[in-house]
Image (cartoon, rainbow, N blue to C red; front, top):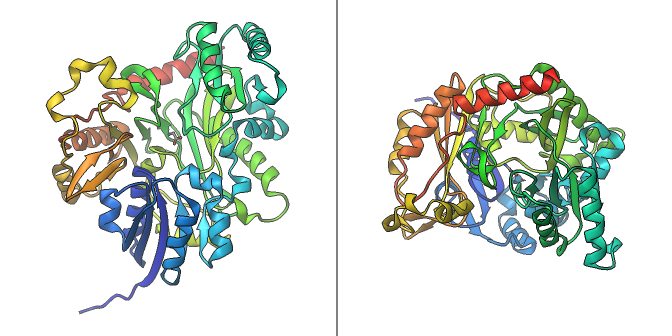
Length: 474
Ligand code: GLY
């Protein structure tokens, strides 16, 4: 009998949703390390509970509680990684690295530029103004009364012909943004949406840009940025991009690094632009404070080149789930390279992936808009993942199940308020990956969950290709 010795590694994972399940899955699939996972979670995520050596629920991501958990297991933990924006922006890395010897993968508070959309726009304006649409910041500090700001807002709307996007300064994980023609149809609606955000702080009103979106994520070791393959997120709740914005109902990745509506020049331009921002933040030499995923930029490809809708300082959800299952390299090794400032390349299999989320009846207002589609008897019943998990066992290379906003109670899984569970389909091309994703979705029963039917649909992708061709002809 050959006994293979594997080095033990203890990893702290701060988790919110399916994104962390995909990250943990990549760790435990390591063939070089015996992983021991220590999870701080939003709730009792069934996948994480089953996989973790130690699991703690700290729903509000209170930093002191997270630190207490890290300290309790400090002797066993080699490094940590953080998925959700809230603790990153609050400075979880700064605190843990100050109080323990555990090194953390995510930017420090200072470099979590997701924390302020205004600061982001100003940074881009300084180093890469071409990525910004026309924008104006309305800060409550600059206006005495609602009447004053109203006058200013209406004048700006007139200048932009009402074609605007309204964005709160604070991070809202892709939600909270109102767009003319999508969610807002009159100047009064724009102003109402503006005011609901202005009550909480500065708001940006910017020119609405026409184009096709792609998500650009990067790993960073403080010295270099390693761009990850492109993905496309489906933000709107309902089929045909209708309904309110959500955290993302699904996403796709092509077998190549770019998407079907992009060309290699688009990708080069994105890399060039984000590197400009990186160099500005990094300064001379290396800046380990940027380690992690400091740039997950939502780009929109327009007739005037790529523009940035917003930048996040964390992995995208669902976009990172398109990538973790097809990582060729050992993820523990990738993380050590990030920690040691030694990350030169990250290799992915040349496969397509499609993520589809199942969500509860009230998510995105579905039960109100389509009450006839909700099976009332199934609402709040347990969600059965058995058949979907069986598919993973049978065909591990083409399908993955990642629970998100789902809680384990007395051995059964229950949906909470946000995106419940996703299926990643993997294939040679997007349509093959989509079939697997939908097969997994069909195997999940209970909870009156629903999903978008057009994630990565051929017609949807062809529409994007036609749209981009038209824009490029302008
Ligand atoms: N997919 C949207 C987000 O992660 O913010």
